[in-house]
Length: 110
Length: 120
Image (cartoon, chains in turn cyan, brown):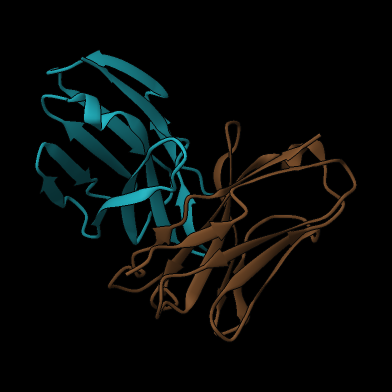
């Protein structure tokens, strides 16, 4: 069974701090996506990474796909309260369309 | 362009009953996928429909079924409800049926707000 483990599970930080969320698996994925989900809503796609070692930036968010395409990280610089939400990674490979990670719940305090 | 809509938004049922959830994809999208989200198991893939045919299925019992209509709208049915079926059920639409093993990656999925099902 393919699994995507995210760490940390919960994170509460002050506005302006930096943070990194990790997404790890023993399986290789052809692509990996990051989503953010807010209460009462479905996940919203932030980025898709495809190539091993790829780095993508979205304003204050930096996403990296591991060289072996088994892991990924999301780094947020100078976090803001609007970044609060559930961050999910999702790998695309094999039988299922997407395998979702266990999720990281982030709370940014003003 | 209107987003993915799901009805109803909230539902309360008792054990043994059955339930039908509805999903209307973004106009022009032909693929609809269903997911179950729970605090313990996270977000898990149920099945995907494309052109009225189930193309992929996750690891869920046969009590979970679905269908897709010619206008791409999809319904999901759960029979003989169990307490463990309490969850947020999400549907996602995409333009095409994704291919898992080749590049470019599958089409972007757009999720609806979900239906919160509580089984008592």
